[in-house]
Length: 120
Image (cartoon, rainbow, N blue to C red; front, side, top):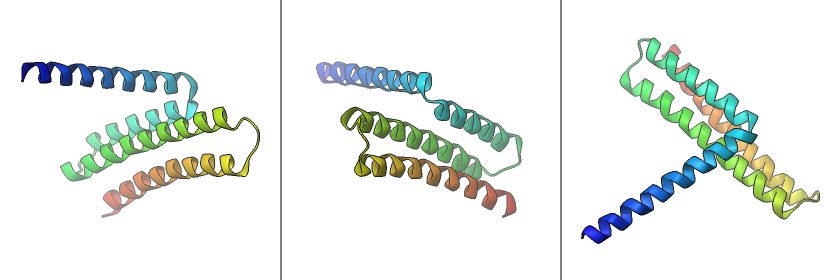
């Protein structure tokens, strides 16, 4: 049992390290990730400054993190597509455009949540 716990703790530690390395790499090269992070920070600050329900705050915070996750996935898609298909290809363009659309939909979802909360 102790051996299993030790192995799981090491695995979790490696997972956290790899995730942090991915965040740092994207942060260093992706201006949009930095921009969305600032938007998320402002959104969270506003959610706690206004008199919102706990559920409303949780929704705003969660959707902001989902937006950042979508941006990281879009970055991963763009990186691998650029690596595998350095020349122009309609499928590569479609993959990159779909990743971008995912980010846009996540942002729209966050904006819609703010509207519903503020107007409701």
